[in-house]
Length: 342
Ligand code: HEM
Image 1 (cartoon, rainbow, N blue to C red):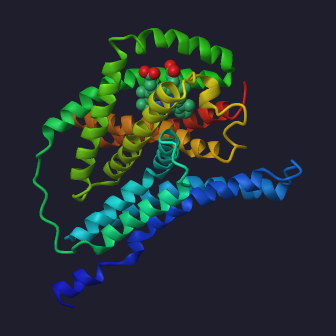
Image 2: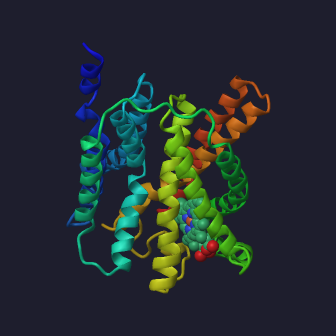
Image 3: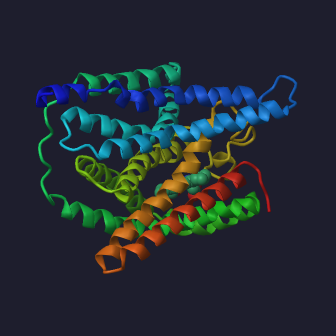
């Protein structure tokens, strides 16, 4: 096979699967909602199993994107098509927050277009532009053109991490009940809502989104190891999560609808996260948000550890332990939001 035949053969539609999976995402959530909301209100064991499987599928969808990113990163001599397919896989990881963003933004704009229609159109356009673009060999990435961005992203992350660790601890206390959650949030607001601090926090987050996209774009064009792929994928999720979360809290709740952004708002009261057709999208959105922010911070810390001479074995063990802890903390926060109390 000649080199050009080989490149043409690489243009495989399988690479578009993450976009198809993203299109299916709202339907999986709808199917979950129908399964957990029987007409008579009684949840049979068959429905319970079906609902658990559908929820699993909703979580598997963004993780499939991560799996594709793993699969597509090892290719030697990638073409421009290969790079687009790889980036599409990364983008599909962010489907849960992007779907929240879509729904909330249509609400803010008071557009009565079904969010699923907009959603499908966006992914169709993304898939088509990936497919129809050129497939010449990708140019070699420059060796280290982004050192400044990396340092700035890391420094901003250290400041943001202080807020995030407080914020997530605050949500963990939801397991104890809304009252204690409210008391801790009130104490935290004295600091993070202070007139001089809140705008700086928001600007730092927006900088983090921009610099993160810049870094992910660069790293997604080169061959990297599995740790780096997780770092890029979790970063892609977080960029969308932060935009969606700030849009929900600042624009939709506080500026447009004048809703108090308290426990009731976060937990989708009174209907809750699980039994409401709209709110169910918040469940994977929040759960993966907590998981990926902690996993992303751990990925950054692993790189810092390696740069400071810590052995690869120790740094990798730290990373694995942190990712397991991230999954457990995420499960605990989501359980609290869904009504579990200890
Ligand atoms: C289970 C997951 C999460 C839930 C339920 C949640 C909920 C909330 C709530 C209720 C607020 C309003 C706070 C207030 O009015 O004082 C808020 C604000 C905010 N959240 Fe989250 N959050 C979650 C995860 C995250 C994560 C992972 C980040 C990552 C950076 C984050 C960043 C922010 C920011 C920047 C604000 C705005 C703070 C401000 O009012 O100045 N959240 N979130």
